[in-house]
Length: 430
Picture 1 (cartoon, rainbow, N blue to C red):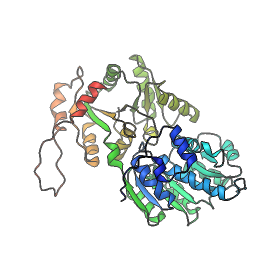
Picture 2 (cartoon, rainbow, N blue to C red):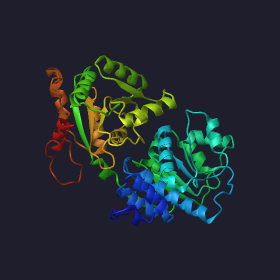
Picture 3 (spheres, one colour):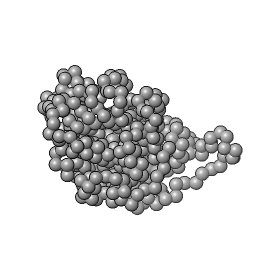
Picture 4 (tube, helix red, strand yellow):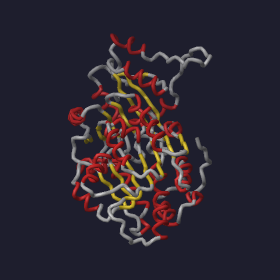
């Protein structure tokens, strides 16, 4: 794994002036750790595997050097030469929202290229005809979800024969969403000689197999632990049937102006929004049954602060870059321990301190112990004043608060752990 001292400025990373000027306009003060390590490696033409949570600046880490390579190459050649319906840089992502977000970022970084580098995003949920028109004459950078890209290729709207750089963003999420077959088909249509950049928050067996098949002598970068430290995690025991009341109480008490609430089902989003409305709290919903236009509008309104509470399924657990999101709440616990980390990663991004709350009732606490064990964390169970547990279940719930055993082989006796310290102060001041 690589290590590097964070440089004082982007200029030290050998980026060209049009990109540096744009970064200054965007008020990017200093490269993040992942940008420090990824940008020089990409400019050097290396394959790489990067493990970093979203919010660490990874989009800029791969987009900036890709843009620089394309821009300098076009300056050496005829910038107006026709390239047919080919693509040079391909960025594969798991969701529509992430595709649009990444494409918007790439276009923003390239403002001072004066249109020399073309970027197109393609994803489902919107008209394929519009995207086919945008792809006429090919594109320099294509940001795509796997399913829609295959559809467009079957219509001969785009070809992958000349891809020079492939980026797999959130590779683990693509595989967990069932894109294994689509990825295999797409990868089979790419040239063997290319630069491959793989980004993943976790590295299950499928991702490890993918890296072995795709990458050549890759540089390995691992930065999750630094990012995760900016999230304060807290867990509240609640009585069954009182989660909505506790949630409404916390929102009102702390006057949160951007709270992302996770539930596990689409209809749960609507039901919870209705229940909160009856308690005087307006919330919007975000899930897969909503049209792409609606989802885009709602997400922009939430980012800008027009919406205080957004209730979402796990479609929002990955790839959504919401600057300075203060609070994430697990109303329903995620089904898998890895999804827990992805959810809370929406807060505490790029160095900002965030708060992640989980509400668990009698039926949840065993599952949360599994989440703790798999993620090697240990959180105190707390109660919300005015919503204390019924005496009949308090003792059994508190049993879940016993400290976990240390991993075998540490050679140390088990000992009780104290609370989270600063976490207790954080909720009071949030």
